[in-house]
Amino acid sequence: MNEEVQMFLDEAKERMEKAISHLDHVLGKLRAGKASPNLLDDVKVEYYGSLTPLSQVSTVSTPDGQTIRVQPWEKNMLGEIQKAIMNANLGFNPSNNGEAVIISVPPLTEERRKDLTKQVKSEGEDAKVSIRNARRDANEEFKKLKKEGVSEDEEKRAQDLVQELTAKYNKVVDERLVVKEKEIMTV
Image (cartoon, rainbow, N blue to C red):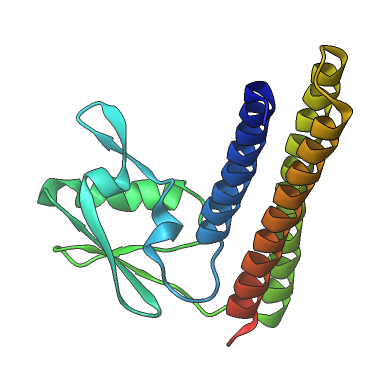
């Protein structure tokens, strides 16, 4: 196979993998009615004058399915951590027991579960659009290469390969959505 064709195939595959990893990141932050340290991934704490990710100043754990425990490495950070969680607008009301910040994760209502399912489907469609865009861009590059002298057979073979990649990654998106929807709808 032509070196340039392989390069564009690899680039398309890389973009499709990035779409999947972005989807995983977004789905990990969606609350499915149970406590998860991922829910606090985007919380930043004021630490010696700079905003620092919560995971770099404390240990975040889930002692049970309804509780998140944030154990700071320095006790004087308790108030800052509590304030940062409240300011993150996650819908949590953290409490401070003098040792750690405790967050009770309330169970989801049926209406909220349905809203989250819609959001999951929307995120899945965004991932599929990114995958299709990678396919489109690769196919455009293959057409340019054909004008530059790549054989028609090789262009067709490359388009078939990028279509196989598209189908494979769309299937991965569908599988991830089914798992997340089931997780959200399970009471």
